[in-house]
Image 1 (cartoon, rainbow, N blue to C red):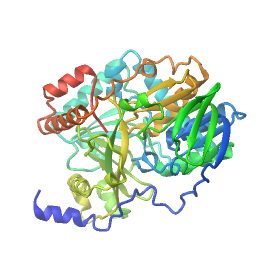
Image 2 (image 1 turned 180 degrees about the horizontal axis):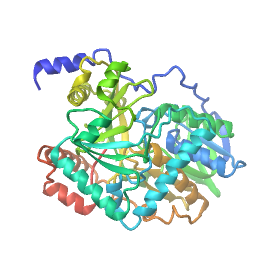
Image 3 (image 1 turned 60 degrees about the horizontal axis):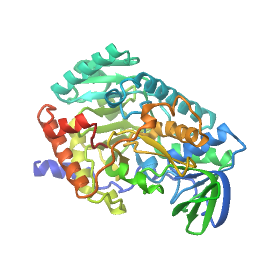
Image 4 (image 1 turned 60 degrees about the vertical axis):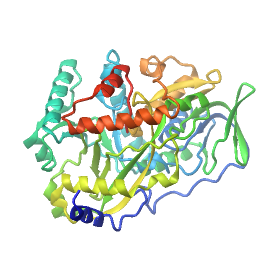
Length: 472
């Protein structure tokens, strides 16, 4: 990296605020009061991100008489739900390829359920007037190397053979650059219906308002400290009170699960993103992007990027940082060396945007599991349900997970609970130092594969055979 280039890229970051763009909004709702004293309810939801909010909302929609309480340790949407890229995908399996590899016999059903889930999110946005900049734009997976273009075409042809290519189109270099003009793009796979873009924080805030309107009692700045059986139900202790509930749904994802045996199934990964200033009409015209699709590149260390409602570009991904011991700490949210790297990659992709500045730069933890997509389960004789492991693709899939948790708590056999994906769990991560060593070796191997035309070494091939991995 030449010093002059580094100076140019870091200059673009000189005024960037180290806070998530989406949360830096004067329309942010005031928090609800903390719980003080004792509460009782039919259903207690722990966690005020998408997972918990969808669970509380759907629980009330299924049964308006059900008494629902939601506890949030800080404020609704403050963590991953409020700072992600806003890609609301139909996929329940962290992409079609991952789903085909893990559940080939169920993939058509999983695709059907995922498409239905995204449709239901779109309906909920309209029904509850969720002001979240919802745009059903689709997404293009772009190839930036020749070998990636061949892989995209081969994969597209395989999906056609499997009957899984509905609303998708392979784009050659000319066609993809007609959509979005980057000199680095050599091919693309365009999914026209399977992804919507949202303002992630506004989606969380809108879900919170909808829950309150339906009668959910929400307590913020109220962490759940312990979970124990109490009679025929459960009891949760908080700093200033307690809740007794017939059933409990845990939507805490990256934060330590109150069911301790679940903790080994996830590890925290730190992901980082930049947001540009609003592009002028001339700058926007220089790259096209008239259809406003979400974009992601095809490397193992990939970038995701999209336009905001006011024509900023969010540019994130690439680095996936795991700290020894799986620590989650606020100081890890800010990583200038990654911001500089991302800025360099941005201008390499869009050299015509030279001179654009970044207004926000941020990071935060997401949870990943060894199969990259959510897993589910129950505890305490099916009085408690949990869902976790969304691996950065939970904006849409958390709604499906909410329905699974509610099905499990009701003891119902549904098309969701009968899925192998729901009935079986991924392999847990090993204890330290083995987790850190394995993840470090995997990250090194993935970077090496990106530098050698995608060729996977013996370590990655072994991980593939075992169905294991590390991703963000």
